[in-house]
Image (cartoon, rainbow, N blue to C red; front, side, top):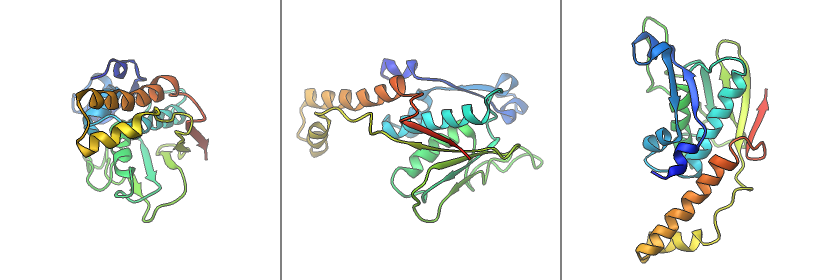
Length: 201
């Protein structure tokens, strides 16, 4: 994996289910960008953006404490099959534990993850909502990549790669250009309020 993956911000959470089942000492776990890449199977601005949105939501909802994985509900502003909604939601599930109906149903009525992730029935022009279940505190987040544009040559190189007419050097150049944008997003804009837009509700 590219070296910059290891330089990206880290999301540290406490998962009380992991603690209960002996999966992590005190339930403390760290999620790195590489974990999101392994989950999605690729690295792109959507995966990186979702990682940063989840990080920002948890930091905002838990300003003085370690975020509780499994303690947050998430509402996506579109159906699961709309655009990049599904990919974004998968990364948010990784970080927050919030899952749709296919999630963990709990032990003795505790540690339920199923039903904590909700999708809108039709696409809405709105942010992703994160709600802290113990306090009801809610934060709305959205991603604006206007200030992190693709490199100029990326579109042409993508066309060649997808058509199968790119040579080895062009394929490498396309991959480098693609990941260059991801690198800038993760390393230069992780805390940029113009990119990671946070609104308390």
